[in-house]
Image (tube, rainbow, N blue to C red; front, side, top):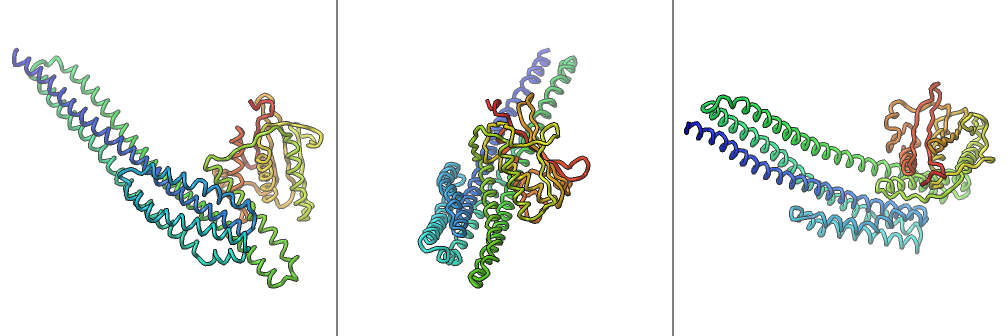
Length: 482
C-alpha cells in the first residue's frame, strides 16, 4: 500500500513538475513571440515612414515642376504640404529607430538627410529662378539633371535601407515561426512524458483512475488544439500582414508610375505647342486650342492627384454648409450642355426628372442639403462627364428622388451608351479602373470617398434593358444633419 501511495504521489508530482516546466517554457516563448511581433510591427512602421519620406519629396518635386510649367502658385500646394510634413516624418522615423535599427539611423544621417537637403535647396533655387528670371531660366536648371540625379540617389538610398529592413523583417518572421514550432514541440514532448508517467503509475496503483486519466488526457488535448490553432492563426496573420505590405508597396509604385506617365503626356504636348508658337507665331490661334485643352487636362490630373493624396492621408476636409442641391445640379447640367453645344453634338439630350418620372425643373424647386457644395458638385460633374464620354449619341437623364423616411435624397445619372465593361464591374470604384483611352480611372474613386465622407452611398450598374449604365449616390437632407 505504501508503494502504491508513493507511486500515486509520483503519478501526481511528476506531471505537475512537467506542466510547470511546460508553463515556464511556454511563458518564455510567449514573451519572445510578443517581442518578435512588436519588432515586426515597428519594422513595418519604419518601412512605411521611409516610403512616406520618398512620397513627400516626390510630391514636392511634382508641385515645383507644376509651378514652373504653369507659373501658377496654386500648383505649389503639394510642394508646401510635403515640405511642411517632411520634418515631422523624419522625427517619427527616428522615434521608431531603436538599437536594432542603429545602422539605419546612421545611414539616414550620412546619406539620406544630406540628399534631401540638397534636393530641397535645388528646388528652392529653381522656384526663385522662375519667379525672378522666368520659365526658360528655371527650365534650364531642371534640364541640367541635377534634380534628377539627387532624386535618383534619394530613391536608391531609401530602397537600400528598405531592402535591409525587409531582410531583418524576414529574419524576425522566420524566428517567430521557429519560436512557434518550438512551443508546439515543447507541448507535444511535455504532454507525451506526462501521459506516459501518469499511465504507468496509474496502472501500477489504481486501475480505477483510468476514467480520470482519460478526462485529463482529453482536457490536455483540447488545450493543445487551442494553442495550436492560436499559433496557426498568428502565423497566418503575420503572412497576411506581409502580403498586404507588399500589395500596398506595389499599389504605391503603380500610382506613382501611372501619375507620372499621365502628367508627362499633357506637359509634353504643351511644351511642343509652345515651341511651335515660337517657330510659327503667325499660327498662334491654331495652336491656342490644343494648348488650352492640354492645360485643362493637366489641371484636372493635378487636382485628382492632390485629392488622392488627401484621401489616402485622411486629410480630405469638408466645408459643409446648407445649400440647394437643385441649383448645383442645374449648374452642372448647364455646363455639360454648353460643352455639347460647343462640340456641335445636337443629337444629345439632357433631361432632369423627379421621382414620379415627370418633367422636373430645377429652376422652380428648392431642396436643401448640408454638405460641401464644391465637393458634391465635383461628384455630379464627374458622373455627367462619364455618361457623356461613354455615350456616342442619345440622351442622359438626371433623376432626383427624395426619401423622407430615410431622411435623404438620391441623385442618379442614367445614359444609353455602351455601359460598364463586365471586366471592371467589381473594381469600378478602385483607383485606375478604366477602359477609356483618355481617362485615368481616378474620378469614381475620388467621388466614392467624397460621398462616403458625407455619410452617403454610391453605386454604378448597367441598365436592365442592356442599354447604357446608371450611377447614383445619396446625401442626407439638410434637416437631418444632426
